[in-house]
Amino acid sequence: ALSSAASDVYKRQFSEWALFSGLGNSVIYIDVQEGEDNAVNINTEDAISVQQLDIGNFKGIIVQQDEVVVAGVADKNRLNYILITFEGVSFESSIQFTNEFLSEN
Image (cartoon, rainbow, N blue to C red):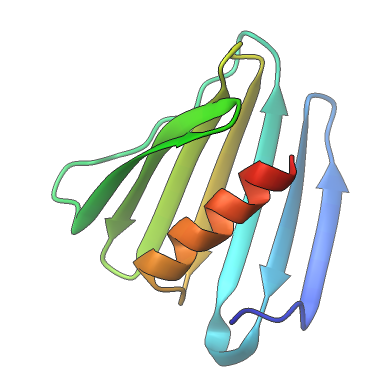
């Protein structure tokens, strides 16, 4: 499990992001972008694992590439885009975190 041993939260004009560092060099980076002109691009080429996401008002994909897992999600109105990057976190734990994060938001 990831503990919030260290965390940073930053805001930019049209996006906000947070970085959480845990035990064993695990990191979760969350970038939320607002606006119709934004996009989230996820590389699925040569992916180890790929899973579609459909959680509440959000749809997206989660992909494992080597030691990194990336989830790209948009709300169904395509106004909010969320990119979550996991390092040192298993694919299954990444899916669970993403599901819980989206269910709360």
